[in-house]
Image (tube, rainbow, N blue to C red; front, side, top):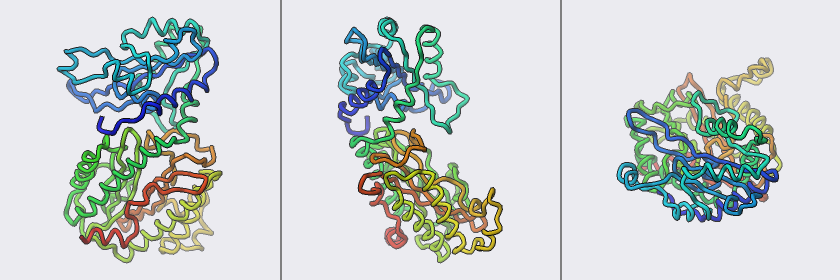
Length: 429
C-alpha cells in the first residue's frame, strides 16, 4: 500500500464494537467490492468496500469477513477469508496477501482461503439464529448495477431460508459517525496532502493553461505524498463552468480575468479530504470578484462558528440561507422589497445558491451518517457555502473540513490558504 501501515488494533477495536451491538446467537458476514470491468480484459482500479476496510484493513478483491462472537467453536468467532494465491496469480496479477500478511494487517488470528468458507459458514450458521448481511444504504445512492453484496445476500437467503436476517448498516453507520483518533489522524493527513497540492497549483496557474493541466499538477502531488488518489472526481471549473455544480470535464482553457473554482480532496488510506477554493486565473481578483468572494468567506466563517455540539444540521442549513440571502442583497442581485414579495416555494436566493452546506466526511467523501443526529464530538463534516452568478460567469465556493469537539469546531484545513491577500501573494511568486 502507498500509505503508512495502520496499527491493526484499530480494526480489532472496530470489530469488537460491532460485535457488541449484534443480537445474541448471530453471525455477520461482510464481502468485498467487486472488480469492475473497464473494457477488454481490463478492470478499473480496485477500491475496497468502506465497511469491510473499516473492520479488517484488507484491500483485496474476493475477501470475506465472518463474525460469530457467540459461536461455541472459538476458531469461528472471527474468521477472515482471502483469495488463495499461486505462482500463476503472482506472475500475471502480482502479489496477493499471504495468510500471515492478512493476519498482520487485520489483527484476525483465523485466516483462511476464500474457497474454504462454505463449511465454516455452515457450522457457524448452525449455532446461530440471526444472520447479519451488509449493503450500502446511503439514501442518495442508486445504481443499475448489482453489487457483490446484493448477489451475496440473494445466495445466503437461499442457502439459509429459516434464519432471521438482520441489517449490518444501522450498526456500522452508528459506529462510523464518531471518528477515532486514528481516523482523525488519517483525515488530517488527507487534508495536508490536499494543502500541498493546492499550494502547488497556486504557483502553476496562469492565463491560457488548460483545466486538465491543473488536474495533472494535483495528481502529481497526490502521488508523491502517498495518496490513493482523489477522494472523488475533481472539479476544476473556470469562468462559467464554475456555475455547474458537478462539472468534471476539466477540458477548457483558463482565461485571463476569470476565476477558477476548485473542488478536490486527496484520499489517504481510504479516508478523504474535501476542499473547495476559488482563485483568479491571473492572480488578482477584480473588485466584483473580491466582493463575492468575501461574501462567501463571511458565510463560511459564521457557519463554522455555529458548528457546535448539540446543533442540528437543519439549523445550519437554515442559517446558511439567511446569511447568503443577506449577502446576495448586498451584492445587488435582488432587493429586500423583492425578497418580501418572493414566492416562498421558490425563494430568490436559490438562483444563486442551490445546495446544502454540510455533509459527513470519512471513509466516503459523502460519508454515512444520520443527518437527524445532533452534532456530536468526534464527527467530521464539510462546510461549503457558495454563490453562483451565471450571468457574470462567476462561481465562488469555499469549503473546509471541520472536526466537532467539546471545545468547539476545529478546522482541519486551517493551513490551506483561503484569505484573498494570501492567495494573491502566493500566486505572485
